[in-house]
Amino acid sequence: INHTRPPCLLCGCCPSSNNSTITRLVFSFFLLLGTLVSVIMILPGMETELRKIPGFCQGGTTIPGIENQANCDVLVGYKSVYRMCFAMTCFFFLFAAIMIQVRSSKDPRAPIQNGFWFFKFLILVGITVGAFFIPDGTFHTVWFYFGLVGSFIFIVIQLILLIDFAHSWNKSWVEKAENGDNKCWFAGLLSFTFLHYALAITAVVLFYIYYTQPDDCTEHKVFISLNLIFCIIVSIVSILPKIQEAQPHSGLLQASLISLYTMYVTWSAMTNNPNRKCNPSLLSLVSNISTTVPSGESTTGQVQWWDAQGIVGLIIFLFCTLYASIRSSSNTQVNKLMQTEENGRSGGEGVVGEDGILRALDNEEEGVTYSYSFFHFHLCLASLYIMMTLTNWYLPDTSTQAMQSSMPAVWVKMSSSWLGLGLYLWTLIAPFIFPDRDFS
Image (cartoon, rainbow, N blue to C red; front, side, top):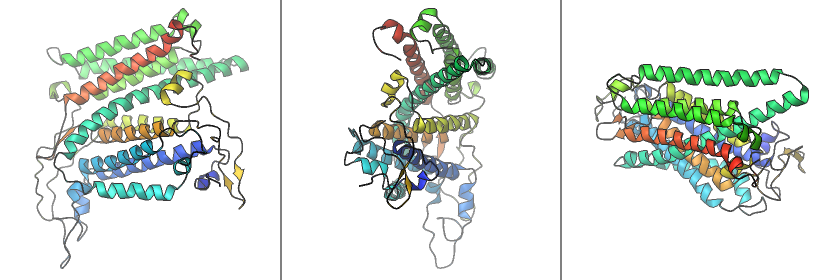
């Protein structure tokens, strides 16, 4: 039985792709599709436009003899994002539970992972429709704290992926420079390293100027100073002779990229400080929205639900999601953390079926190249992270329909940055501390 039949539509575009890669790309596409819907639903003025559709929104333009059924207050804004991301989280969590302990494509559950895409899409749509019927109550507040925990873990996973990307990048360019005797690759590495550190240092300066006050904002001063010190420490450690001897591919490129990402997380955390004096980029609270909307007009002002740091967060999220789908790393430490096998089986050429259609190569007959369950758990956390990013990590107040900034979001982001730096430091010193173990 050909279990790779469903992804064949993609094989024409990717004739040499492995079945495992195509499966991860399609699931990632589901996540990105849900993200796109969430972005559209949270755009400013969307509720006003929907209310202009005759006979659609409750309290909107009416058609004689037709009762308006849609609750547009739920269909747009942060409520729609919470429900859309709730549906995606449930969808990926369901598959994470189903795919536990799948060892190869010969497992009866493997065809469910690698096929039946139309039915899986219908399941996602069904869960999404059901999510919009969840009563308000305490749903948004409870799900906000689920989002905090999930996003904390996802930020750490993002940092692990960036570490892996930087290691692969550095290793590839160094090998090309050494094998081809072309010093341009070294110049490229040096240029990007300098760029990353220049951006990180610029960020620190701007943070001290705009996010601190001489007589206030003590937390921000501590956050900026601590992360600056930590970044200097990991940068120095990465080039120590003993570390270089134990791990030749460690270097300043990885440290510079991690430092830049740490400064982004620091910036993102400070934008959630409810103290307006310490947070010039604090979004305007939606405190003037009435719970009842007059017929024909919406009193909702134009609300900027997410700003520059949210957009940067989305870009990093998109990169990490794509990289997680196509990565094939030789870094043993990262592979253990991400539950993936080293490199996996090479794809080569696709397989032509009896009907003449080019299909993906099943490269998992002897063993899976990644943990199906962990991959879905990763997308589950990504759904929660998207929810928090699009709503700017604000705590929803269902009684006033306002979005309130909160200190828990600040501490979650900062602690995740510290944990991430600790993990990176461990990848540097572990080969030196345990020389008898394989950390290649």
